[in-house]
Amino acid sequence: MSFYDEMAALADELLREFGKPLTLRCVLPGSYDPGSGTAPETVTDYPGTGALFDYAMLAAGQTWIPSTLIEVGDKQCLLSPAGVPLPTTGDQLVDGAEVWQVQNVKAANPAGTPVLYELQLRR
Image 1 (cartoon, rainbow, N blue to C red):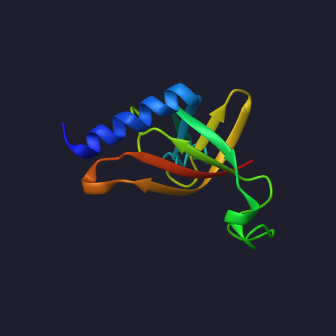
Image 2 (cartoon, rainbow, N blue to C red):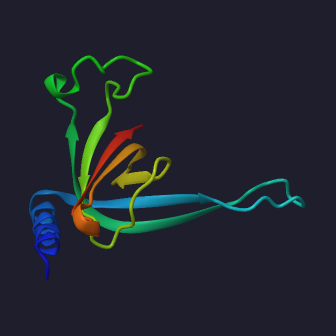
């Protein structure tokens, strides 16, 4: 086991202890069907573990302005990559009855080993 595999296992262990179960919902557009005039989506849910945080005013600086990168009400999620694919913009994160849209993704992926996903979420 490499150093980064150990770090990924530690991050997963800490998120399981101090985080909560979350579901990553990947929504992929289907191919266009000319007969029905629609492009049905394929939805796949992946159970995962993570922790949600409010963005701190000091960390966000002046980006708390509508139509900028971070808006009031956005959440930061630290998500374990264990059993979860790399999220993309447009995916959803389900926390109980709340559904959040993934706005931005940062992956801590040193030497090709995913250790942690940091997501910016918006309703």
